[in-house]
Length: 370
Image (tube, rainbow, N blue to C red; front, side):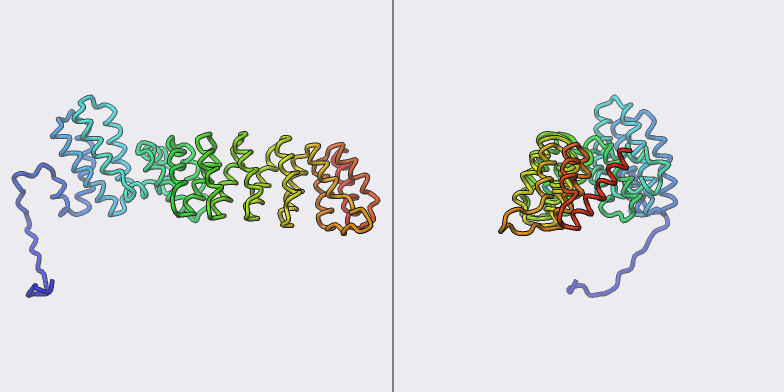
């Protein structure tokens, strides 16, 4: 630039530009057309697409359609892009000539990129009337379609829009495989989002990749993985969630306790009963007591009865009254014969708070029974 003599540029545009003799496509010439001319050209090309074409003719039509789709994307005319995609897919299924079919596949690959697919994913919420057509496009382009939906979900601030993206993602065939690959993303929030999606969708393919995240350095990722594993019902995920109960982060342990509370069975009760013996964080202790009440196994009720009773011995330290009261309410949630017997023993406890908690619990329990 420093060697140029002038500092201005003049451009002369001829009224009728001469056509290059060896041009095989009209796409470059369309670059000089006005938007209305381009938009009017699309229906004609789509009609041409339904005819019996030779490979050379198909190349010329599809090359121009590809250019028009990219141009429409730059101008924000995304519905036109979706119409082009749909026409390509409709015609592709009826093609028997392998050479012509190859030209179609090349054009689809040319248009399968984030700058085009992300605006198409937005049509799911901006044009609900054509949502089925949009979902078909995203399904056809595979993992790239899944990525575009996830991108819009992450960026969206509207709960209703996020719900739409979530529902569509659950129906895309390659969603699980794509989300599993996203678990290796270096960005923690992408990993967390992928883990949450996989937890809702379930599936054996996601179990081990999610369990691997329990070793991640970021506690936010470990917490998301624990939550996701808690939603997938299997013996493997139960063992994985149990490992998270001894995580170094209290927030991860709380998530693991919540996950075990949702499982109904003796194994979950045994894991919780064991966890409370080694837990020193008071917030997590409260959560474990509540979880034991939800599980309500005989072992869980026995552990709650032990936690609710007063300290004994001349030199025994006075128990935390808050934890004793929490154990009383957890016994009420258990609502088993063993829990009722333990509450009746505590009805005359010396501590006023415990005694009142027992009275309220028994009154509520009897009212529910009646």
